Image (cartoon, rainbow, N blue to C red; front, side):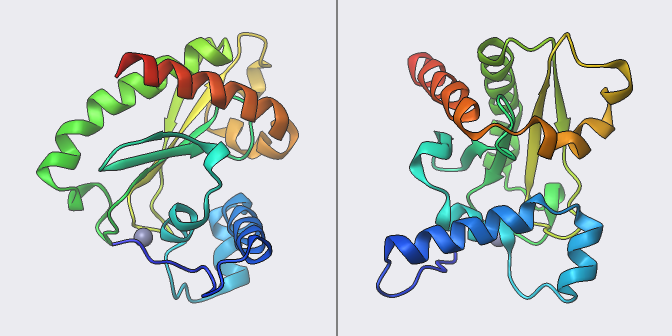
Length: 179
Ligand SMILES: [Zn+2]
């Protein structure tokens, strides 16, 4: 079940504020978030599902939603629509059986449209057990010391929202053409 955190009025101002707040929280490394926020009283993934602007969403099905990730061109955040506190082992049979094909389709689309050499798959589940993971495209020109798990730390330097929206739009079109 998705939790709506929008105000009763649902104003654009409130929506933008919540979206920026959600973006800011998700931008924090998980351990920093823990120190800053202390006890987590609600699910950030549900927040993001409720507040993600339509231009950031590259794929939606009845089970899954994929949005731009960290505003880095070609990076995608994939979230189960259904809230669960049980991470991968809490996936339903239907969610589990669709996960592999989904990863393949999204990974191929991101690789093609971002002109990437490689696509990383990354998920932790430390602060939010609601299942989600990142697809991180990595270009051929990326310096050797930035390759691997450390790439995520470079998100602020690699972020370019306008370019991410353009690449995201092409990913959305490519996925729509396949379905
Ligand atoms: Zn949730």
